[in-house]
Length: 254
Ligand code: SF4
Image (cartoon, rainbow, N blue to C red; front, side):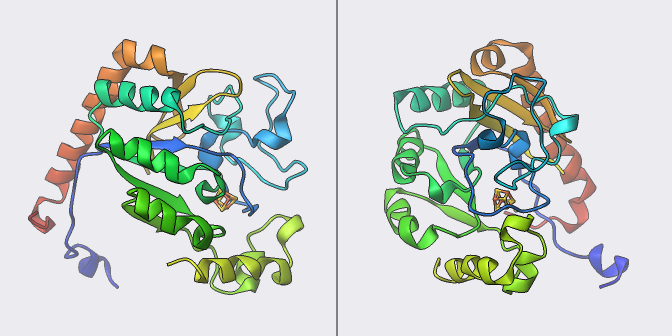
């Protein structure tokens, strides 16, 4: 494809109304390029204080490649499917235009309460998507679909065991081990990363805003009560207007 061909591709610009929620830190892969939603790998950093977290491989072999240049100051914990989570979602939706929640991790399909998390978001009138490497999809996605899951983005890091092994930490870098992952994926019917929500270990819900890295990270309470929330809302509208103007000639009507 030439630059000239690319200039004639149809483009659709829609305003960002999505909240990414990191529901779990665990993952069965150990990709060498993982950003881990900007947070430290919990299992490798337990017992460390903020400022001592490392994004380089620990015992798990997993990495958080932007940790040294972002402001993550907490370890993420698994988000429970409870009234705290429902209240946190409602608080973000009440302060920032939000129509969709997108679950991330780690690997969301390893979360034992995934269908219940989907149900909570749907009850609040949100559409629900998730990003998955597919490793546990066959076991949990049918129930998630029944609970109202709308969309799945499957991350495919290799179509053969050799390709997947080439981007894994030594722990998983053998094609034989890596072969399990494409097999699991086959059994299951991704600039700007936007607004994210986490739960800090033994702490509050946190909101991170990622424009290039995690450029801002506040507790949920601080975020919804602060001027930052209005700044993020305005930024998202300006981005949508800028991109719409940029691609006006190629825009697809909708
Ligand atoms: S599958 Fe995703 S979350 Fe897991 S290590 Fe790879 S990039 Fe990170």
